Amino acid sequence: MIWNLLLLVVLFLLWLSRRSNKNIMKVYKEIGSGFKKMPLVGHTYLLLGNDEDRMKGFQMIGNDAIKRGGMSCYWHGNRLFVVSVDPVELDVILKNCLEKDDLMKFSRILTGNGSIFAPVNIWHRRRKLLNPHFGTKNQNNFMKTFIKQSAVLVDNLRKEADNGTFSVWDYLTAYTLDSVCEATLGVQMNSQAHSNLEFLRSFDVCSSLGAARICQPWLHSDIIYHRLQRYKTYQKNTEYVLDFVKQIVQSKRRQVENEPDSKTQCDKQIPTSDNGMKTVLELLILNKTFNDVELQEEAFVMIIAGTDTSAIGISFTLLMLARYPDVQEKVYQEIQELFGDSERPPEVEDIHRLLYLDAVIKEAMRLYPPAPVIIRKVERETKLPSGLILPRDIGILIPIWSVNRNPKYWGDDADVFRPERFLDGTKRHPTAFMTFSQGPRACLGFKFAMNSAKAALASILRHYRIKPPSELTSMSPGQYPPIRVKFALMTRDVDNFRIQLESRS
Image (cartoon, rainbow, N blue to C red; front, side, top):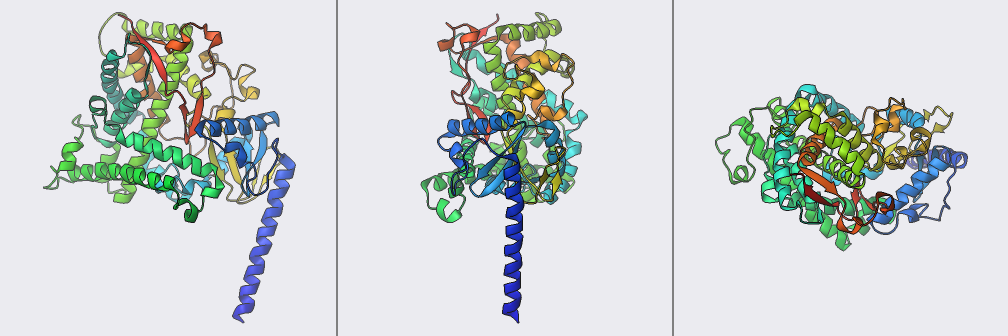
């Protein structure tokens, strides 16, 4: 009897699988792809090579969708992803398909169930609890931290001013790390003073290795991956990163709960904020909202999202300002209208008044979004405005890079840096600008990232003129080669954001 039952179960599962595959193949035939599907690997040959090659592959996949009217297909091994760059279709997808794809299990090795990649049932509860802590009142408090830390940044950059080409990346990640830790965790890292960036360097290693694994299905098996040298490197850096966050949370918990042994060595290494504000982490501890593991997961997400997103946005904006001196001059004039030749420190209201700078940052982040691609999973059959029906368990690949450059919504100059497009009153579908995602799972910290970028850039431009690296100074702006970018989960400049600074004084 039991064997007959087992046989029926197996036959039923095989029928479901065949039925599901039939529906998936129907979608593939209906949408199509501009690339040849190879046995076993599908289209993953497009993502072979190094981080720069992988970014080119994602750009090709996104461009194929643009050429085919907004949608195409991509086979990741034996798994089909529908690729969409059309805001109308994406609006429905992002509102109905909230689950991150199964491929994100590799990112969860670092983030755990942190809300950025958490399953929907976990994400929904945490997002509801976190939302109030990122409202307007707290954003103004965050801004005070950005202004304070940007003054340190400007001072640190003095050694580079008038001294030729240098990479601005480490300066900016130190600024954003100090800002996010003080503003949201109540911890003063003092990275700008001590160049304490080992945490971020370890995270960069994990990001690069994690991106490579996600893009290569033959590395998905733990049995294979754990036998490779790169796994040992990944594991070593993962342990360092997670232990770093664990120390911060434990230190903050001891301080908040006033335990007798609060002055431990860990606390001396991680001094706490003394500005009197209750930060997100402190409030979560006081309200007993999350347990220790949940606190560590959300603290990690706040650190990484707040550090990388802001630093990437600032860095690419600086590259654009160096390449477009006329735009840089307009930003400087806007700053001058507020401050003139005075030395007074900026106030929160000053930063909010910099509307042209706001447009410049958005335009830079439109062209160079921090997250160039995101993926979702269809949990229930979903009908799109085009009439296409997405079956359960199919994947959705959203190349934000290509959505932000879709000429159907951004015009024939979609690849051109033109900040005025955010000020000219042109109405576009809100999902056409996908830098911070859209829908219920859109980035919670988008205002945080924008305000951090505005404070830093206003301070930098007030004191320095941004120029391209020395090898480009003999060229006219129209002759500059394209910026080379790479995919390491986030968008990065291959040349590590090299510029020159010239003192305005």
